[in-house]
Length: 254
Image 1 (cartoon, rainbow, N blue to C red):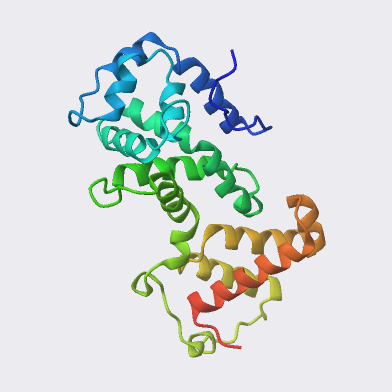
Image 2 (cartoon, rainbow, N blue to C red; image 1 turned 180 degrees about the vertical axis):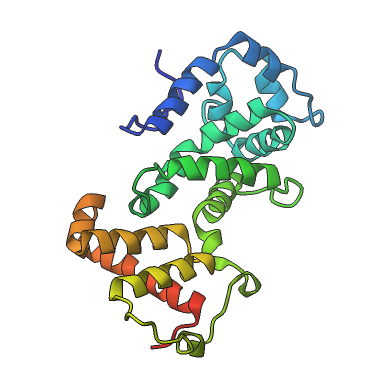
């Protein structure tokens, strides 16, 4: 039976399809419904408690968080209460994840070209769990869904780009000039491999390192673009950013 809450569209990606299938099984499961109905009220005006009293489908909770079907204006209140319960209850957390899932998939989509063998949704969904567990329900009471999506995106994809300088290994330009002359000169490819290894050790994001290696293997931005199903311009922009990150991590000046 089709969910009354519009689920994210099915794709060829196993992970998001599996989450959708899991929700279809969970939403009417008796054990889950009994567990949800047992959640304590936060007070006499707890809107969530009123919804739970007649709960027959967990989709009703999703609708309530969106302010639909007779729950106008209840979106932040109900979602915030679910996030609060999710601190100690996995079912509440799973409901929140289902509520956020379309937004999480949308937020992850721009990062698809950074990963060859993994759906970025597999990265952002666990990050959303972590963001939910860290969420301060006492101070962040408005725009809950948008805040959680932003937190999850940061944890999944952007945090590595904002590492504190204390965690980075800064190397002066002179460090690259103090190597003894080898008996056999190193090749350009060997030099590049050494730089990539040093950059990875210095904390350059994995997807930048992977892109550089992909460019070396393919020997052409156009070939990389075709293999990643993006435009050549996108690959060149990502390459420029990756090179800049390597330069900053290794303190290389040009």
